Length: 285
Image 1: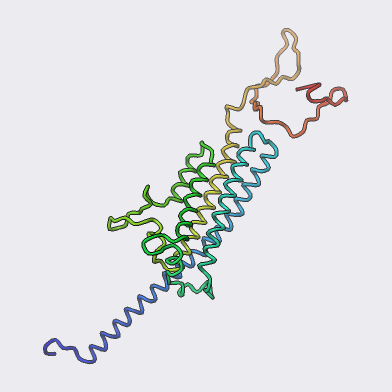
Image 2: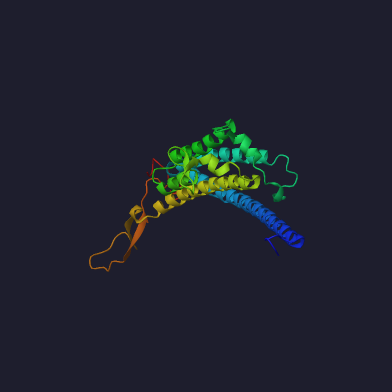
């Protein structure tokens, strides 16, 4: 072969090779889109299960509050507030996801969800944020701030998790890229991404909401119960077989641990003396 010229056959082989490479790239792209779709479905299923378990924790706290309002009432009030804040933010994100899926005929056909048009237009307006982008940032910042404010002071670990889960960049709202330059947090995470990738990211935010609820409710309920069984809440009591012993008689009795807590009161008291029912406040305190 003179002058480095390629034969028609070689040119055809090279062309077919390029077509093959393009096909591989296309198939890989579809696989990546499908992976985001599968991940989104799994997270949504997990969110549904966490919703059920969180409701059980809240119901348990409500029961405790009805039995002992002095001890569990304030915790239940805080738990309800966190539940309200979480539901409001979760529902906003769910509405956003519904908007994103408008016009998608088959929600399981992830290969067609490769465009970024929806959020690019809703969140961004040139180099500035559109109204939708401003609301998105406000919602996540408000949720982080408000939930942190409701959490009791002794729940530092839970507060730290909330800040980490819902952070929006540094003090200036920037994120450092791989090349060392900085970009606005919302652009870094949501501009130019395929629809299914952004959908999965928003579902991940919903998972963080559910995890925050779970952490708060568990800490409130378990923390209080742990305090109740702490050894500092117990005192020693002496139990004996009879009220009086004679001189020289062998003493028989036991030293036991007894609960001492001014806020722990029985649901019902039924005391009788010689068949007569005793009245609280009159016959006993």
